[in-house]
Length: 245
Image (cartoon, rainbow, N blue to C red; front, side):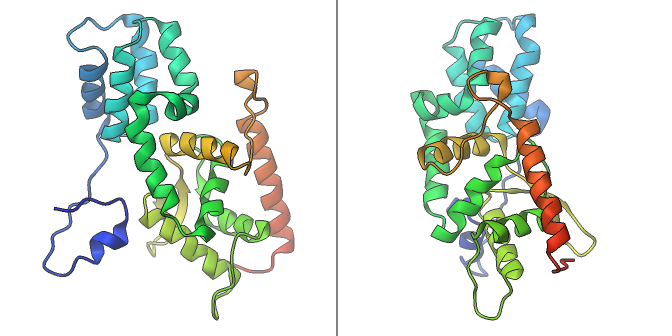
């Protein structure tokens, strides 16, 4: 049995192999798994219910992330202040807490295995706000404008950028949210946990710094990011004559 995050690796095993794509846990299943790890047989404090569900939601149905965060929180005081600190500083926790080392290790393996040309494209996606629906046309044009896309044979820059996007999705680094009637991706997003890892890497690599006014120390997050990205996209729409279906 072979498990992999890369779709092309699974497809290359041959016709005799059977593929079993793992689905993310549904909300009820994710909550039950988290509760077993975080609360054990202890009563669940009512004041933690809402925050705990926000933490589970941030895991996006990934069992490894749910188990790791649940185990980490089981060692914390059952106090809203303590749990909220973990929730607000998840990026720091991923980098520094041994309980989340497995999550970080697997995600880093996926990142370091990316071809060089895809690394900047991937990190660029963490500049969008959390849970932001990224439009394919928008992202492709932004990558081209930033100079991340290399010319490949007879492909246009936009066609090459679309191949980059497909590869990131095949590697499960980005999630497909919506497709058009032809099965072509319309919107995608970056998983919250993956984004936290990308933010940490971006800071280490001096690629970008995201500011969040909610956290005081880092100012002007989602609204500012969204405004900057949308303004750049609007300019590209004016000057870019290439039409993508």
